[in-house]
Image (cartoon, rainbow, N blue to C red; front, top):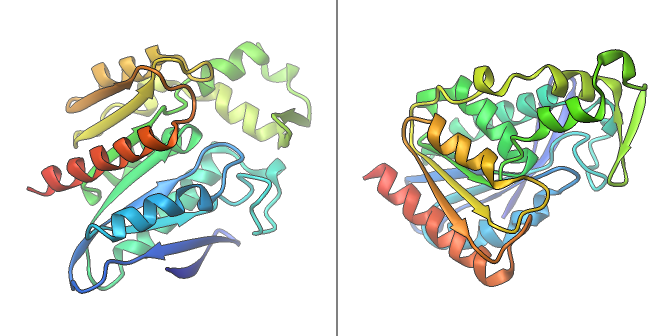
Length: 245
């Protein structure tokens, strides 16, 4: 594992790269964590993929969680700043010697960000993998604040403070216009007992993308147990290999 720092837009994102050993050319997957998550959430996955010939990149969204050490305030983080972070990581990893193609993996809010980034990156990624993507974010914030004038300067959500611009941007996002035109392969994985992101959002995404598959995890909620996480990793590895084939 090699630690990295990626500076862009006046801020620096911390990351870690897991590289395969003994091969000179390999695909890479970028892991995007969820709301108030951390890059260490995917270290085990990074080791798994590197052990199977796929480089893995884990990183912290600047201001995207209380464990982030970038100094970028959580109250300045928005969906747009997180998308900028992911695009900067993609640019960095794509330029590494040995990386033949790059895939995106996003979990929860990181899934939303990965879906948004895929619309811009298009054929610069090999495929898109989404774990219970939080495509409900725009609807959730429109319910929370029916009008922009209702939004305070700061809001606390699940122990983390957000600034007004997060809510403004989330409310303004029109999902059918924001995602769905990406024409590459998409793998969506969702727990049937998810109480945070209703399954219907992933079903909508499956039907909206031109080349998407939805895999259900009947006993899982918003977070998979160890055995089902292992099954998900195997599923994603197969997705990467079949996409390259």
